[in-house]
Length: 329
Image 1 (tube, rainbow, N blue to C red):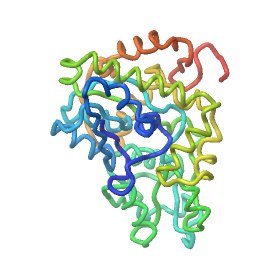
Image 2: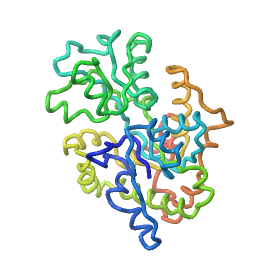
Image 3: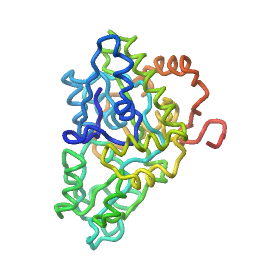
């Protein structure tokens, strides 16, 4: 199981998604214990590193963002989307500067240097935030780095002037950074994560794929139960985040809305929008299919929902992110 965006090396966990919760609970290991099937977890610095691992046949299942999925297709890596991992919890939607920086607003950052991971979803989010602030991507300089840690270090040391972050509050409390842009409430900045499987693996081992999806969906339902919020937070602090960081990041939305696994209209709208923005901001090209829905294999999710009695647990959302039927969650 490959996980993009992890802290490769010292801390093999991330926080706040169903895949890392499955890892910390040992749910997949328990599922396959009697079969003698070993589950190996690999954490990668981001989507580009994940795609490299998949291209070399080192990963069967992969969790990463929409950007990784899109770029994998552009590189000819055939992956089948199985379920969404995360929905309305915006990631990398804070633009931060050093606490002693003279820059107070996004406008002040026109012409300045931004640390980023070119090709990752956070880079597209940064481009969107710049555009929303009236700044063209050609009016700033991007410094391309290979990990989130390197991005943060570049800003901290003064090599760059700003960067985007997903979870800034610990550093904010330590008075190491300031937030100059908060896009967490903007639905246009959403970038859902995905669980995908290598095409060849799916063709040869559909029963294993089904069991993996069942475990993920069952864990998603557990995570969405507000009664389990405290237990989930206790797991996620293993990623090195403080309780305050978790509480501030996860206060805005009910867990049931944040962690829906459904491949609904909203998910595919985000994927299409990402592809369009990657072309617009970066000039990238992606394999053209009749519909991005062809990238998915929904039968495993459908069966998991049926077997677990969760057909009506989550509500589908329309392309704009609103629950279908006007139901308010």
